[in-house]
Length: 146
Image 1 (cartoon, rainbow, N blue to C red):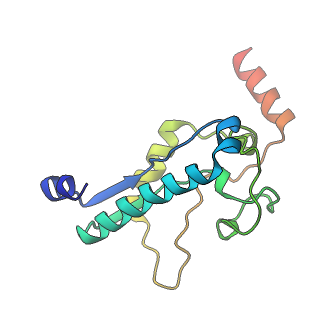
Image 2: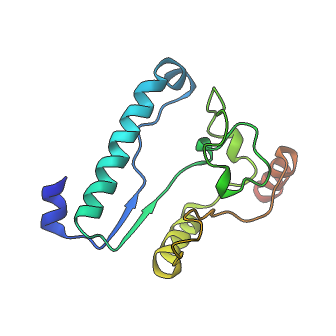
């Protein structure tokens, strides 16, 4: 990785890589997933820092927040309690489904404009700010698809 950074000299890095699996894999190999993801994250973040990368955007999912979290989830709730043991990826996200283009635009906006100070929170939650129940979401999908 260091060679790639040296050759390409990126000024911005977006870290979205992770080892992921379904409920069965998460239940069967929880330490393996944690270890592999820590290795990926540590390697990329340290190499970016040593390579004087100007901006690093680290994307995380709702799965890294506690099972029982105040809604809407605040950024400072990150890893403050037990996670959902089945780590069901769709259910925590049912209150919001951001479109990939919207998330991409939010990432570019954050990289170009977000300047947290040393005493400010370093997390940025990208969402619509509107919570929907599963029923409301299903009804909206039904209306949109006919």
